[in-house]
Amino acid sequence: MNIQMVDLRRQYHKYKSEFDKAVLDVMESGQFINGPDVKLLAEELQAYLRVKHAIPCANGTDALQLALMALDIGPGDEVITTSFTFVATAETIALIGAKPVYVDIDDKTYNINPELIEEAITPKTKAIIPVHLYGQSADMDAILQISNAHHIPVIEDSAQAVGERYKGKTVGGLGDMGCISFFPSKNLGAYGDAGMVVTNDDDLAEKVRMIANHGSKTRYYHDILGVNSRLDTIQAAVLRVKLKYLDQWNYLRREKALYYNDGLRDTEIITPYVANFADHIYHQYTIQIENIRNELQAYLNEHKIPNAIHYPIPLHLQVAYRSYGYNDGDLPVAERTAKRVISLPMHPDLKQEEQDYIIDTIRAFLKKGFQ
Image (cartoon, rainbow, N blue to C red):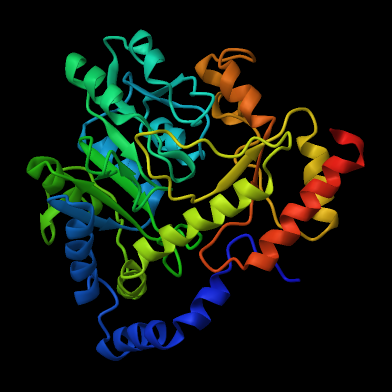
């Protein structure tokens, strides 16, 4: 049985004719940078996400940096975020010279705990970045209430959550800006790197566009400091094909998650919690197990079941970020969670017999005397 964590090859063959045509049409056009598909993708995502502006860029990390730069955040400033996330969230804060200020997570959703945000605010706080981790939205009403009270912009890290809805509203357009990654393994993934910034603010949209284009509105005239961050036309063409199927694929992910939940019921495995305000699109299907996570991972590896730990070390304890003054024990929920989580294969084309094998293998591991 050849199980994949995310089976992009299976997906490609299922929609091969559409993908091939989309890519070959770009090849025939010769418009590889800012071709028609880039503009059309932006328009289609604006409609899908119900936002006024969607600005394509090179990748999700760039999207975060563009958003921070558009807010004029830099040395001496602070940005509140979570430590339990992919490194790009804090990396971009650090790269522009600001300081990441970490808030611990909710022990059920793994997202930033809104109850702890206010006490982290200082006169230097210039933004809050909640991460919609694993495809489940953060508690945006609570976060936006704090944002509005203190006049602090919110940048949604929606890298793992395209298509997720918070109380029926698509995430990404709830704060001042949303940042999206189209990394190939994402629910909506390109065939290479790609990203996007979305916003309902006209001024921020114009500034993001300029920054992504070398700080230029008119060619060869540069009004602000910028970077070069473009989404190429081939990636846009691929994403346009996939966008048509995104809701269907997210529905299938939820079905696979429910099947896992049923199969792992009545074990010491903690299956994903779904908040009453979220849909959860299961970018990752991440379980928890206390004390024996590493042993479970070794057993899965032995039985050729792909898996991953998202994430083994919270960012405040990473070597590259030690200079910001955090120590072991400062964020106990994030630190405890990092020792317990493990992600199982999850994608729309996951077969029931593959899930049965995964479930049976985990149950066999527990039966061996680890309960």
